[in-house]
Length: 336
Image 1 (cartoon, rainbow, N blue to C red):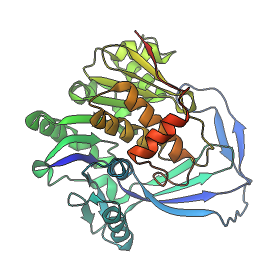
Image 2: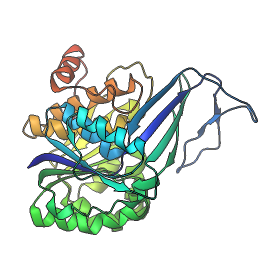
Image 3: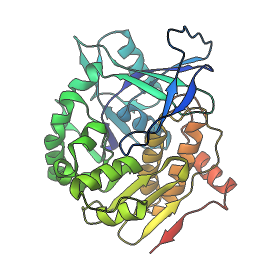
Image 4: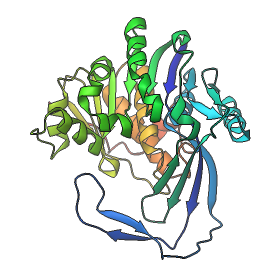
């Protein structure tokens, strides 16, 4: 039996860091960032600073969980070409089981092309490729204590009812980190999975979208407002991340706030996956201690954003504890 099986996507990631980009201001919007990353029209941009890595929600979280001494497998779909072979080799070298990874003969492994500019956030272009066709043919055979469900795209999103049935039938503890497709479907479409979830993890924007889809008149200005609306949805833990502003968790006994640890930001790709995976690992390693899990999650996210790629900076449990001890004045505050 595995400690965790992650479900979602696995991709080839290319990070392209350039100095020529400019951050531009646009009109304010509730659904989009008011900031844009721009380049001179018709220009050719050359860089010596490119990083080739792997990503995707299922792969990122699996690698982070394995780094924290947990027995992990991942389920996603990749192509049959050489890129897929290299990805499987990466999993083997990082002690993540790939027996549930599917190979697609017709579509290439998914690709993410990430443009970063020093001092600014990234822009990511994504080609789903084979990742949009996950069939989970081996779902019935999955034997795990925890299921970590990340973004499902394309036809893969149709798997949600089967996954919900699996969780119910086998009494699996579910971590649910819905992706854009699931968030766009709204709370009514996700009600069953959320009610089953041991942990629901979303960022602030996603939380607001879900709350508005459940109740268009609900207050969404602050994260405590969002928590108040979400507390009756059934998840035992609700976690809302807010980037550099920190993160919140609620477990029915109160709302906990964890500030972000200081970090020299190199690349924010994968920070959410690193946070979520470490929160889940923290619950396992600390027997459900919310505050300790939040500290571990914040440490992992701070380390990941200080490195290139989605998982190069992921921490072991001792390394996360060392970072927490280094910033002992930054800690969790509980709001009853």
